[in-house]
Length: 526
Image 1 (cartoon, one colour):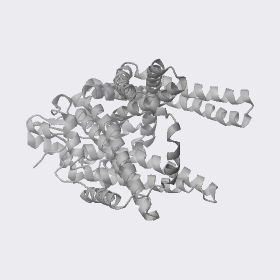
Image 2 (cartoon, rainbow, N blue to C red):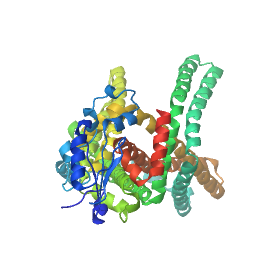
Image 3 (cartoon, rainbow, N blue to C red):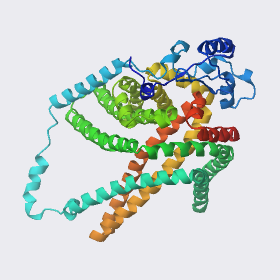
Image 4 (cartoon, rainbow, N blue to C red):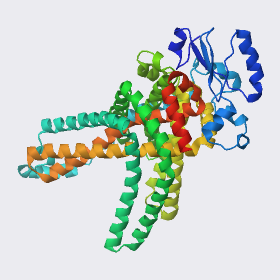
């Protein structure tokens, strides 16, 4: 029997981690089981039960443990049965927590590959649209006075070197930011909260100065809201600080996750976009809205699947480290990537399909620019944008369960809904705080890359306009590469949040110092 995605190596060393979830009224039964084994360890506030005779370590999470995590005042405020529903499996599946012996959601993977192959066949079987050569023939009369194009001015070898510098500098800044985040996480979190209010105040003042009082009132309201949010969210900074420091530490320990993120998030995504654009161009003469919907759907489905493969890969590594730490398998990133592209690939395709459908519907509505009912179209786009954001957020947490527990997507999505029902506000604030830090770091990296690329081009050509063009390109590349690299941190934050909410005692067994930091910051925050 194959071991699961997180404790395969732990089994090989004679140990096995499992989780036994029960209600408080099962304490006597567990006591009898422990006496039959010859040893009984006292359980307090969700601390684990260790049986040294068998080399097994289990974790029992009662309602008091969950009550502490939820910050509830009274235990009766939250029904006991809801705590078990946070898990992405039933009570009788507790022993199978880390065992992924089956391929999940195979149908979704099969449909994904069949649809992709069909798109390739259709795209290459259809004749591309014919070009109108009349203008070309007319322009042949002016061969003696050909214009000099923008690319004729540039030395393509030097331009290529500039792009290489952009990419390398972006990656270097990504790793530099990781070190800064680990040492100055609290300062960065405070900075992004304060800077948000400062920028809104500056914009409000600018509107007042130019006499646009409607805009001044609007942004003034936003400024007041930002002050309120700062007062409410500032007390959440200690927990976000500990979370960010812990995740960055694991990221620096396994930098191969960043390599996977950049390779698939940048190179593979660009290759897929070029391939899709070529197929879409060849099949553009097919005048059928159903076909158009399918082509757009395939772009979003493949693109989202690539992103989620990286997400699940990183979540698997963080999950391994959370439960095993000192007994990590060799090359955990590659092992997690293998699981994401094999047994869990169907679940990834399933979740990506849900997001792709929403994105495609939104793209179809956006394309109706000539619609007579512009107000309804605008309202529909706003609603779809909100639905898309919520769906992506929930889907990301559901895929954390897929990576850690190895269950099917539907079961993990249900567990995610139940968890977010009680801890959704906490997760949202935590994601927003850390997300602001990542975005701010990406923008600063983009500015630095843009300045360097502008300087390189201006030194070579002494043309300020060409330099500004490359500065803008460098800005975009710097932001894109850095944010893509930081997707690893986002995945780690989600994974640690889910596992700390569901299995806090596991952290105590593998890292008592970090566990104390988490609990201290959590009690202070909530």
